[in-house]
Each structure stands twice: as C-alpha cells, then as structure tokens.
Image 1 (tube, each protein chain N blue to C red):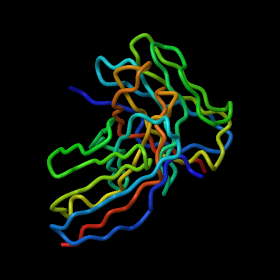
Image 2: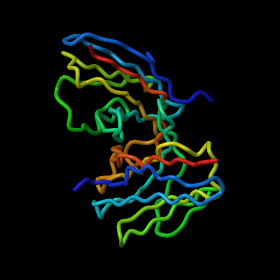
Image 3: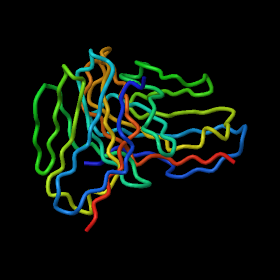
Image 4: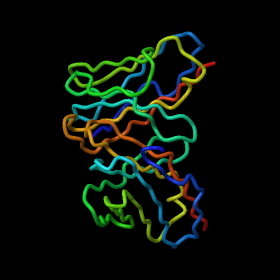
Length: 112
Length: 114
C-alpha cells in the first residue's frame, strides 16, 4: 500500500465546472497536508495547505481534510483551462520531520 | 524576494560520471530538502538539511550525498551515475526543520544520463 494515493486520471472537466481531486493516506499520525500544482515540465507550486479537519478556502480552491477517513481533497471551482496541470497531494508523516510524502499526482484537463 | 534558485537548470552526463547540483533557499529559510522526480511519478524524498545538519535521508543509495553551507545553500552530489538517475531534481526550502512548515520548490535541475 502506497503511503499517499491519488488517482492518476486524467480527470476531464468542462470550463466553469467544479473539479474534485482526491487523495488518501495510510499514516494515521500524519498532521500536515499539502496540494501542489505542477505544469508540464515545471516544478511543483504550493497552492494549499491544511492541518485541521474540515474545509479551508482560498479563492477558487477549497481543501478538505477528514482525518478519521484519512482522506484529503481539493475542489477547484469555476475551473479554467489554465488550471490544466498535475495536482500532487503530499503529507508529512507522523515523525513530523521535513519529509514530504507525495502521491503520484492527478492530471486535470479543463476543456474550453 | 527571490524564491528558491537551483543550478544548473539542465545537465547531460555520461554513465559513471559524477554530478553536483546546487540550491539557494528563500532568504530566511534554514531548511533545504532534495527530491527526485521521475516522469509520471510524484517527487521522492532524498535528503533534508536543517542548520547544516542532516535531518532525514530517503531510500537512496550511498552514491547520493548532500551538504548544507553556513549561508543555508546546499549541494546534492551523485556519484557513479546510472541511466536510472535521469530525473528532475528538486530543491525545497522551508522556514524550520524541527516542526514542518510549508515547503517551496525551486525550478529544478533536469538531469539526463546517457
């Protein structure tokens, strides 16, 4: 079992729709979770961090964390073609060192 | 403010050679981590350094080594290069190393081993 799992996709949504990206993790002691966006050929860009159960909103992005279910999600409202990228979910394990554990990423395609 | 800077951006090496990659963190950040990302996969943790000390090491062979300098910049060295070392090498900078804070990536170094 991978420590952080994501569906690789591609996830295809029409422009203006809500894109829902999901991630599960195996280390129940994980405390910190992050979503990175990575355009093809570029490095990951941090877009959201979440540490507590519930929702955290930032503009068109909402991160959701459910520690009981070991589940993290990212919602992108009013999706734009410029949102087309790979979205990486990452956690910091229970040791809380500087090690980020990444999923393999979900490719999102927003079609005009 | 300058972000995380890595050099070089691209590199082509021959099998068996050695390579050194460099990273300068965001000003004020004391922790630097290195990751390897192969095509189609998420980044894999190689090392973390905080205040010039190694804080963590991932599951990579001893051919991989790193260090952090007094100005918090860092170098990643890879000896005896293999074709499988071809990847995007990412440096991440964060404020602290004892309690994890948000990490920001540089643009990466694309290493091709031929």
